[in-house]
Image 1 (cartoon, each protein chain N blue to C red):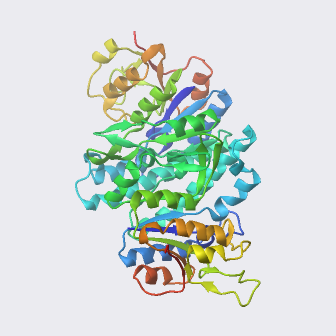
Image 2 (image 1 turned 120 degrees about the vertical axis):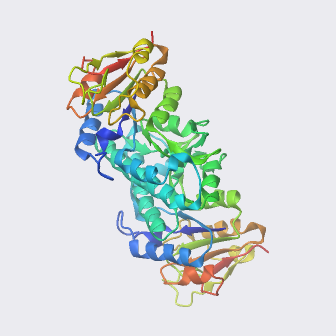
Image 3 (image 1 turned 90 degrees about the vertical axis):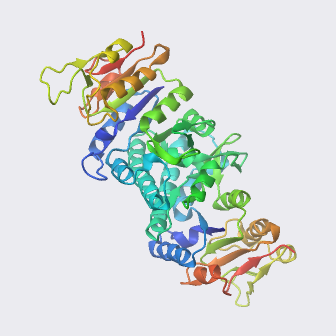
Length: 257
Length: 257
C-alpha cells in the first residue's frame, strides 16, 4: 500500500481561516482512484487548525480552563475539514471513514500512541480507507497538545509498512535556498543524510512546519527499509497520478543509503 | 454526572432521509446548559442511519464487497449528524468533541468493547463532553455490525458511573398498550421487573427499536446500583430541564427493587 499525506497548503488556503480547496482535493482523489493503487490518505490542518491553535497556545498543553472552548472549536473545525475530504474520497469511488486522531488516541508527552490498531487494520482489510489528520490530542502528561499530520504518518508507516510514502504539497520539492528570495535556488532531487546536513537551516516554505531541514528529517525517517519517500506538487494537475504510475516527475525523493 | 441519550426520533425526522431537527436539538442543549449539571450526551441515528443500513443489511455483518460503499456512506451520514449536534452543544456553551464509536472502538460478536477509556476520561476530566452515537462498528467476528446508541449508553454507564440516566424521546413515556390503537392505554410511571413481565410484548413505539419490552429491559439494565433511569419527552419544551432540576414531570422511571 501507499501512504499519502495531503499537506495543509494544498487542501486549504492557508491565508484565510477555514477555506477549503475543494477542486484540488476532488482532483487528487480522482488521481488516486485512477492509479488503482491501495492508498491511505492523511491530511494536515492548514487554515482550519493553525489559527485558533496558535491564538490559544494549544500546543503548550493545558494551562487553564479558558483554553477548553478553543480545544473543542479546533477539533470541530478539523472534523469539518476531514468530513469534506472523506466526502471527496467516497465520491471518487474510494470508500473512506473518518478516524479523528484526537478522538481515538492519546499522546504521551507529545508522542502519539497507537497501541491498538485493530480498527484501522479492520477497515483497511475490508477496502475502507481510515482517514486520520493533524489534531488536538489528549496528552497524559500535558493535558493535551497538537499532533501533526506528519506524526500520524510516522505511526501509520509502522502499522501498514507502505511500499511508498508521498507528501503532497503545493511546491515542486525542497530547495537548497529559499526560492522566493534566491533566483539560483535549486530543487533538491534527492535527500540523504549528507544533503540534509549541508542545507541552510533557516529555509522555510509555506507548507513546511519546522522548515526544510525538519521536513527532510521526517522524510528520511519515513524511508527506512529501502523504500523511498517523495514530496510532490499536488497543485499541478496529473503529477500525483504520474508519480503513482511510476513515471518520472519533478519531486524530491528521500533515500537512506 | 448524568448520562443522556437523545433518541433518533427526537433529533431527526424518522420518516425522511437525513432530516435534522435543529430547533429541538438547540433547545435541548440549552436546557442541559441551564441545568448546570455535568452531562454526557449520546445520540441515536434516526433517519441518518437506519435507511441505508437496512437496505444493505449492514447489521447482518460482512457478506460481500458490495456493502462497503454503504458502510462508508452510513458512517459519513452519522458523522454529519453528529457534527451538527456537537456544534449545537458548543454553541450552547458546552464544549464537546465528536468521538465516533466505529472510528474508535471494535465490537466482538455485536458487543461493543471499550477496553481503553483514557481519551473519554481525559476529555471529561477537562470539562469536554465526548459525544458518541449509534454507528457501524468493525466487529472482530462479523466483519462489521450496527452498534446502537443504547449499547454505547451501557458502556458509558460502566465507565462514568452516572447518578442518573435519561433517555430523551418524543413520547411522554412507555405505555401498557399501544396508545395509538387503545384510548385506555396508560402511561407506565414506574418500570420494575414485575411490570416488565406483565406488559404486552408486541407494543412498538416509533422511537423504540425492539419494542417497549426491549426498552424496559435496557432501562432496567441502566438503573443498577440504586440509581434511576428515566424516559422523558424532549419534544415538550422545558421538560428535560425540569427533570434535570429534580422537578416532577410526566415520564417513565425504571427502578430496581
